[in-house]
Image 1: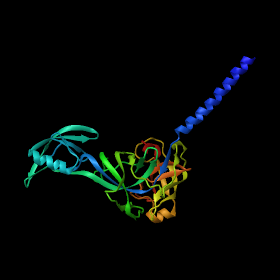
Image 2: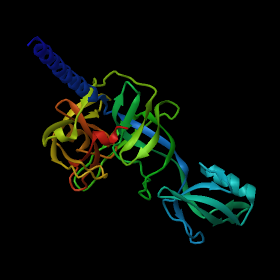
Image 3: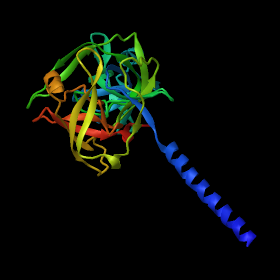
Image 4: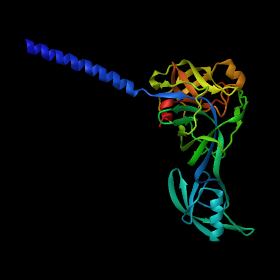
Length: 323
């Protein structure tokens, strides 16, 4: 009988330890981030030079391709291309072209115009713009922003980024949106005073490291929400107000989509806060990345606005933005 009691007691202890371990495991799985909502300036150098358009005499390449190298020398700027062409002084040069992630060799014709050697190509090597920061992780110094890829405005192609920096925006002005017209944010930033850098630009936004973090006017750490817990109904977004402070605004989640598409349209969001409507007209270009909060958890970020209704747009699940 005594032996049976001992076995029973040991079983109870193991059961209690099992519960304790499960609780600890559950706590470890939780993640916490600082939701942001501040407007940032963004600049980046492209990986290779992006082809925006080409003249007829250059066959086999198209808008959206990138020139990775010419005559075995890597190119990262317009100046690199110009320097190589005028040094080689050839009628044709061997180039490596990247298209949709794959590279291939191509012989490109060169024209001599006014003693300068040129490709008949319109190219871009740098980009800049305005967006909204979504979150900051104090443990790793990682940040996430935008909720969608940086694309070239002329060809609507994802830009492969070699390196990029983010800045505090200043002289911010909102051009209000209205039905049939997408508003946007105008702002300046000093390119010698960056607050972070990034090397990743994918369909879910940009990710990098903050080197300068001002915790004034910022929210505290909150839990990252599970997308399965998201409910239609009331929620909030964080966005920088006219005074430069991040403020909470009321929105309504009209629809949640679990189809796992990578288009940044996981939620349909409607702005219902009259303060934000009076300030921006609803959702405008540059607000992409504004964090969405529900039940005191960060659940996603704004990504797009409806053209026919400036108060309604899309949002992305936060887990897609966390790398």
